[in-house]
Image (cartoon, rainbow, N blue to C red; front, top):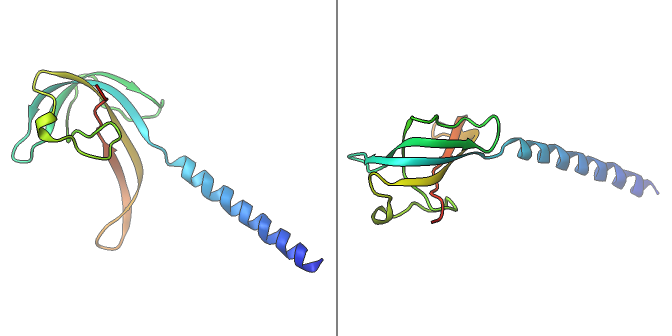
Length: 128
């Protein structure tokens, strides 16, 4: 009987810890901005696309999205944001494309051994 009582205490503690970590994981979520942009150029010497934002729709009310008329610079990614789009498949200058700007705020570990706030950004093109 005593063993079962201790088991219940530890089981309750485990559930409480699980709930606490779940809340922390829920708090950090991707912020997403659906955009339509017009490609205006390619940067040099490091090639990235430059585009003028033509339309923006935030998925969350508190998402920090570029504004209509802003110029953004980015390396285009596949729709699943797991790979960069090969340069020969980049949209051409003057072309208008749909894409997402999505970011996740968190803490990143730096070489100096300290964690510091950072923003992980992705720029996936919509599948066409």
